[in-house]
Image 1 (tube, rainbow, N blue to C red):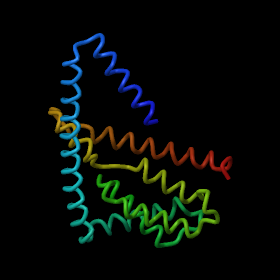
Image 2: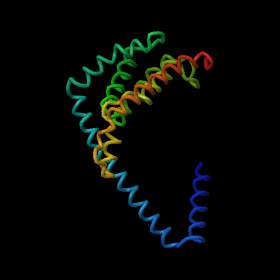
Image 3: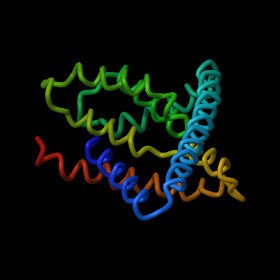
Image 4: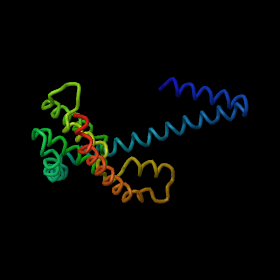
Length: 191
């Protein structure tokens, strides 16, 4: 893949130098690099901020209360599989973090959850259904506050950066529902 991207980049630069003004190409590359660095800095600052908030919340009862409420949902979703209570706890913490919009800070819970689920897996080279379900829950999870997107919209001077909250909630619910239904329908062909 890197060969393809490198070839496309070289082709574009050569084309631009032959048919356009080379100074425009260099200026464009410089401005794009500056924009990329600014985006990285804003996203890093936002991630640090929300990681701090998550750290504070993890020392309060709020996250554990949300996690306990989600524990029943997790138990329902994994009722047919053998899943330990420790794995359900990590999955619940991961879901609570994703719902609050600090999914990047919840990576450790997802890794520990997968480790716990792997203990019940009969194969080291194939996923079991509980692992696939958790990956889907983690990937297309419900998000109440999409902090990354709001930060990027604010960076680019959006008039109302938080207006995407309701559409994100709706899309999250739809994508999670479709993903879980698809997994349950298609799993019999995988196994």
